[in-house]
Image 1 (cartoon, helix red, strand yellow):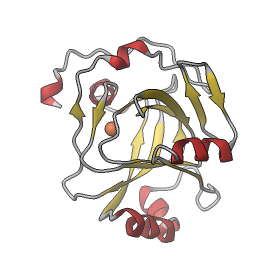
Image 2 (cartoon, helix red, strand yellow):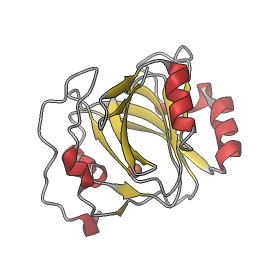
Image 3 (cartoon, rainbow, N blue to C red):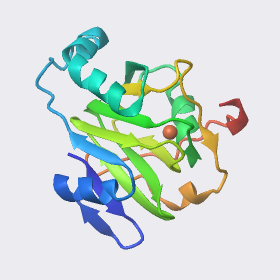
Image 4 (tube, rainbow, N blue to C red):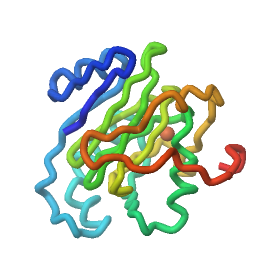
Length: 192
Ligand SMILES: [Fe+2]
């Protein structure tokens, strides 16, 4: 279950209908999907097959042409560099759509110029429309496995705002506690 927070007022929303309504008013879709189709250790192919109907329906809804499964673990090579690409405010020219199978992470979303954080975990489906300012970080366990949808076969690229607003928000997870400071790799944004 996701946790929606508005840091400026310390408002915390943990009930699915309220989360869905609050995000929908800003054009962000949030849904709870069941996780009982596949065992936790199944392959990406098994996931895509087991959720084939939902994946195809999502493609129809959003005009997505492809889907895959991203699997990030603490030992994933280049993890810090990967996280550093996405933990600064950016937009995409296509939607960012995730159905979380395992692990946790936080999406910070700028909704009507107000920052909200959405901590997502297993069973959470989040669709962030193209052009929405946002950034993302993992929780302490540095683990996330999720189905992703794409509108372009070449994948998607972060367009950084360089606003620095992301520096004002601590990536605190409700589940596993985020331990470290913001990932710093020295990689310049224009290489990403
Ligand atoms: Fe993104």
